[in-house]
Length: 114
Image 1 (tube, rainbow, N blue to C red):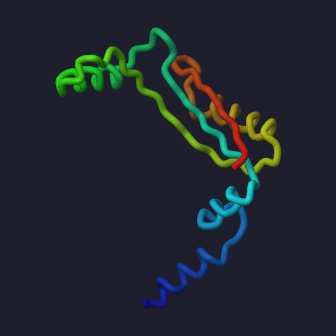
Image 2 (spheres, rainbow, N blue to C red):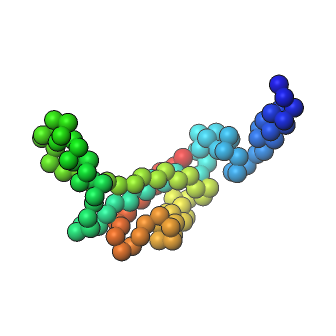
């Protein structure tokens, strides 16, 4: 195996803590941290061209009983917080600052232990 590959692999496996993506799943499996599920969807009255196009395509494919399609985004976010209250506050701030545009989007947050 080339020495560069060994060096990179060793550095990845040697890192520990929340910044290591290889060990983060183990942390959640142990019940540490909180996992949030954020659903972002368009507000009522805002045009949804993606949903409209999917509806048209489904009808063209013969799915004539489909009456509506709405698009949404889903994010699963792992937060290194011990309490669901702190995690919810953090995820709410993420939604306000980045994930959702308050003019056209509404969002819902579901919090659960990792």
